[in-house]
Image 1 (tube, rainbow, N blue to C red):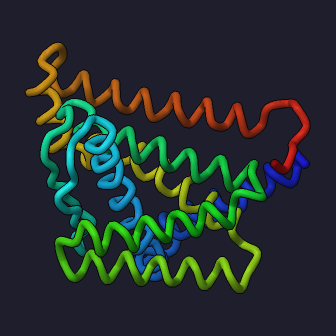
Image 2: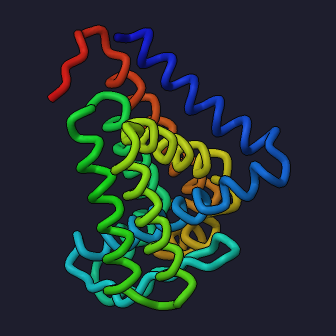
Length: 221
């Protein structure tokens, strides 16, 4: 069981690395919707941070260049700002963990992810591009889930892509959030918060891998 899990992990990791660093234009085109999905998880993290602290999400937008924005009202600004980077790290690790360890949850998780994309695109509508992408991606995932048995691989790949993307993009991607966070939480300057956020993302990844490869027998529950 552990060997099979390691093989699947190496497979999805190799696929991602191969597409990103050796796939050329084809790889970039294949990973383009995955990049937008990572943006979606980032913005969803802002949205969840808003809701968890009593605020209201007004709209979420995803742009064609991979940028995104969440407009909210109320809530605790510190949690909302951190929710993008840390939230996407948490969501990515959850997807990866379920794909790796929870076979019976995989199909339901893919469905829930699709529902969240459609809900975001319609209820928190901001642009036709964002809504079209989210609905199209949800339909594509649903189709793959229905006609194949790749739910676990889908979750592992999407989760891994999210984790690796935010780690390698830590000095660029969350820059606007970090600047606003440093102004709000004046304890440390922006550069310190940058590495604290990266450290949290790395620790989450290490903990997740330890849980996945713990020595106790794997159970499908």
